Image (tube, rainbow, N blue to C red; front, side, top):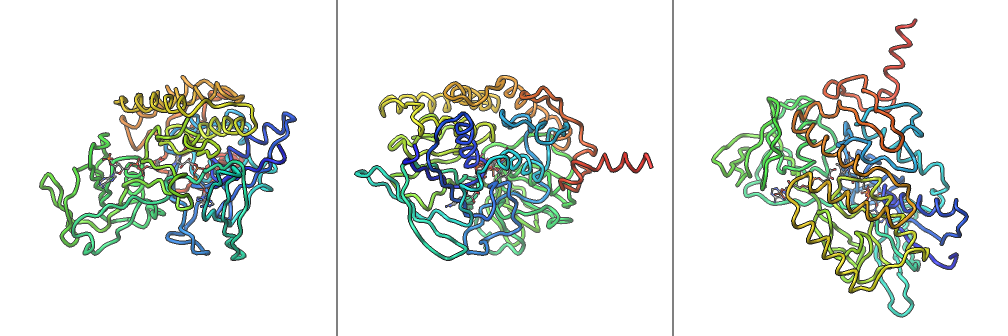
Length: 457
Ligand code: FAD
Ligand code: NA7
């Protein structure tokens, strides 16, 4: 195995899951291949590694991060818990079901800090280009060492693409927008709702970003929030101050016109119009081409590039499940690379992909989507020794979460769930989410203890 070299692009939750999977094999006494992970940022964590920057970073690379200040988990943490590293093990006490970003970042780091994974990661290194040689059966990666301004290349037997897909904005054009006098940005560049205090803002889109940025701006004091949908409204009961309208047709100055005849003046426009799967480092024949959906075409088991299975993609699906799904993928990918899992012929792989695509095409409701991704993960879990967890219970929690959001979009984050890994019931947070304007780890974890101590004195 030592002669086998594995390259990983990206040290976000997916790339870290791959490193963890190899660590788990090593702990079982198995000899693992040589691994190098390339990360263009100076730290790991991907999206969870918050950056105040927008545009380009200090070395001129496009900024990867799309997360913002005051971002709290948008689903119950019990649905993403690593089954080999529980929240209890990390925090040593029950915490609430919807922690803020710094707390989830801490959790991700807790698991990986226990290993020697950092030794395998080359930070500040961008994968610039990949090629594959049919004769040698090796990938050549061209890499930019950003700090030292050096370009070099290395060869690998297997390549894992874990570069994420919520980073390159999908930015549509609307007539007249070039003359809109206020801020126009994509959700990718949104860094905090405080910027929009007292403003009337228009959000275009009707998915996670529109919903959460809309609610965040409402919570942090926007004058009004208007969400404009193309296909379907989010459709929850909105509080006063937030409303949904159909798609806009054009702008005249600061006035947006909508296709139902409604028109309104706005101070700012935020495009919550999703992201493109963008792999500027991959040539045509190796590049995954997909929009955001639950089963990208041409990936066997959602992982192996069908034309060349030595090339694997992690986390490329639209996501209900996140960290635990990346784990189940990484464990299977690891076993393939360590010759512990064999994949069938290309023809059989194609048939399997087609079955899943057909299933995906027939999904109707959000509950169907949850069940689909649950079935997908069940299949993966059966293929490796990633610790099993009760996926049916997790699917139930996702459905409860969807209902909770329908019931009250401002209070769903105050609900609590039970861990399927440890059985622990989440604690209620010391402050209701709508009243909590501080998302720091210190306040989240210790504010109630400090208050108790003060009362005792
Ligand atoms: P990423 O986290 O995007 O990491 C990819 C890594 O690859 C990055 O570190 C990047 O710098 C690196 N990279 C990219 N290109 C290169 C290159 N050429 N060379 C070297 N390195 C490269 N999930 C949840 O579970 N709960 C949430 O509440 C939640 N909220 C979200 C909110 C927002 C605004 C967004 C955008 C996503 C959210 N997600 C959430 C989903 C999130 O994408 C996943 O949780 C997770 O971060 C995906 O992990 P990943 O490793 O696949 O990708
Ligand atoms: P999504 O979930 O991909 O949703 C994109 C939204 O943008 C969706 O509502 C689309 O409408 C809408 N869209 C896309 N193009 C247009 C145009 N041209 N005009 C109007 N509306 C458009 O992206 P999100 O950013 O919400 O979520 C991505 C991740 O970030 C997610 O996992 C979260 O955890 C955070 P459609 O319904 O297709 O008509």
